[in-house]
Length: 427
View 1 (spheres, rainbow, N blue to C red):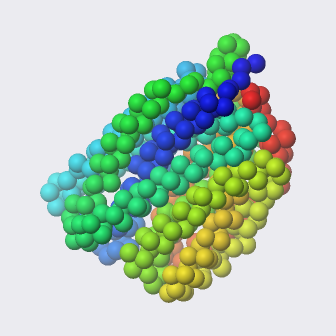
View 2: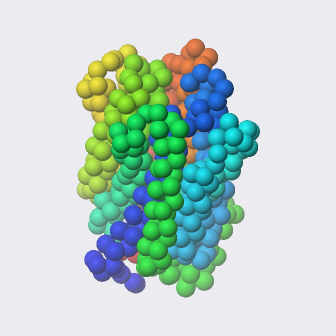
């Protein structure tokens, strides 16, 4: 059976990671800059109303992700991980260019938010394919002994993309000032994203194809069958749905919505909210490989139990406490603690899902149920949170998040530890 050398393994993981970081940067640039461009595309209403409308567009982009996951998942299983990853980064580049160049509502009226929506749909299609393909690819080339460690870089680059978007935003704000950011500076992150996507396009062109795919294709088995996925692997598919529902909801609360929560519900300024988000994300990102390494030693299931059990118990008190404090230090440590608990899911979610499926339906199995649950729960996190707030019952959102995490905990209790029962055969 084909094996990887250390050099080829590192080269493949590095190339895949860089492309993944660029795609997530492009995706998160929208959330990072939303506080600045919301009045440009949605000039009517107060801050909550404007953020609600930008969150709605964010959610629609998420609902394009299952379509992208299905298309790219099937394509990846049939024609290769490498080709699918090149297509996804090209679509992301196009979406960023459209956002960067679209005039505001003051110039072209309702066409502005309509074009913004189209761009986010393109990016949603791209990212729907990207997650499944990159998670599968990195898990396949990682090797059995250190699979948890190396596959954790899927979320290192995911968080790195978000952190890079925030860093660009902070640098721009201090360089050109608040007024220029509101007028035109918010467009710069999207221009940068489009340029970086072109670089990732060429890097991915030089990647080595996954040996798991090569051997699956040579075996003659049917590749990328949607019917096969749901008929032959229903338990695995339901497991991915259950894990993703709670994991993605909590992840987007702490990493995407939190920047707005700190200003719109908490007592922090925009600058403080952005800096708090950046600081917690740095620590969270650095913790991913350590947690992945731990899963290689003790198994995947113990970390998942901590993540979902902790999320069930901690979400309500964490959000309530952060909303009531005006201390940057207190908010930082409270949020970081909650995020590290969730790291038990984020660090290993890619490898856990990949280990559930055989190679001939692996990308589709990782991508499609993930995208469906992520769109339903992660993509709507901001919108649901702002809806509860606008209705005057914000604490209802805290309860909602806790319940979804509790359901995820029940899913973990019923599953086998994939470290000991992995379907990834190649080392």
